[in-house]
Amino acid sequence: MKKGRLIAFNGPGTNLEIRSETLGELDPASVLVKNLVTTICGSDLHTFTGVRKEPCPVVLGHEIVGTIVEIGSRHSGRDYSGEKLEPGDLVTWTIFSSDPSSQLAKEGIPQKGADLFKYGHAQLTEKEQFHGGLSEFCVLKPGTGILKLPNELPLELAATVNCAVSTAAGAVRLSGNPKGKRVLIFGAGMLGITCAAMCRDAGAKWVGMVDVSSERLNRALKFGVDAIFESGNSSVALLAELAKASSGKGMDRVFDMSGAPEAMEVGLGALGIGGVAVWVGAVFATRNVQVNPENLIRKLITIRGLHNYNYEDFVHGLDFMRRNWQRFPFVSVVEKTFDFEQAEEAFAYALAHKPLRVAIRIHPTT
Image 1 (cartoon, rainbow, N blue to C red):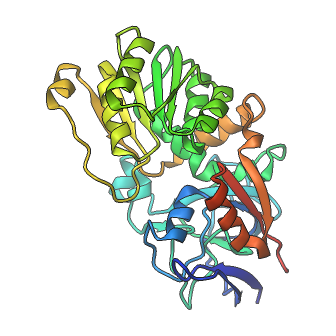
Image 2: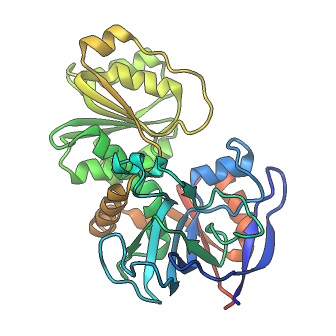
Image 3: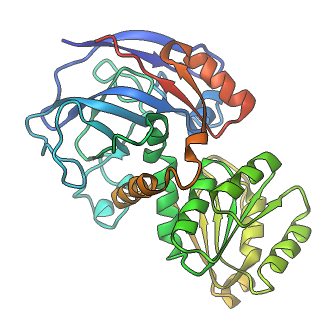
């Protein structure tokens, strides 16, 4: 019987707790992974501070990479792309597992399918403890999309693939092909800059970025962004700037990665005829968004929402990062790395300095 350490989050305002737990017998359809690195996502910070509610205690961390320790006898032994899996292989996996035969999964939204389980979001129980990034092991359930990682991809960067990168891939998919389009993105965080780089990679005609932070905006220029706009101005003034930037034709695609209702409202106003808005950022309670129905109807505007991503987005996200991690300065997005025992310090740093990502290296004891 293997033993391993994990870090339990017991609720906002409490200290993280390092525990030692025993791994039970592996389910024959599951895969056991030794975690190597997890990165702290915005949703982890929301849970840590109480903005987002999760059942506690919980092992936080869902952006994870690790190496395979054991493959259950009833598992296919292959990753989602069909490559053979073996102990020692470096892998990452979807943030969720779900029943691939469920109706929603068949409709292309397995992240809302039956028997849904989300890594880094589940409560610790007597039966199941190893299901988050802040632990030395992770048990991958049936219905989890696993992908082998290229050895050349830095581990800290590879960890972001199974959340931010794949979510951005899903947003671009929902928007329609951005080739030759004018693209506007609200929110220059990890989601926003990844979305910008993906649109540039796909042949977008023009990419604009809106954010409250001049520092983040200037960094976005290195990720395929042509023009930046600070959102400190009034909505009217910002809309006038955006109209000028599009020569009065309006934007073709607008992504909201900020979650701010004001940003979503301005984005709708900036769209041209046939424009598409994709909303991703509002994954916590906020006020309602005001929509002008006449503008929506006369311009034939489409609004689409995305929460997480599907298996194909996951594949496309990894493929994008494999091809582009050196083309754009993605190695800079993980600004600091902490050891397992420094998890408390890592969260404090992330909250105080607001980096795009910090990483925590996991040091297995077995």
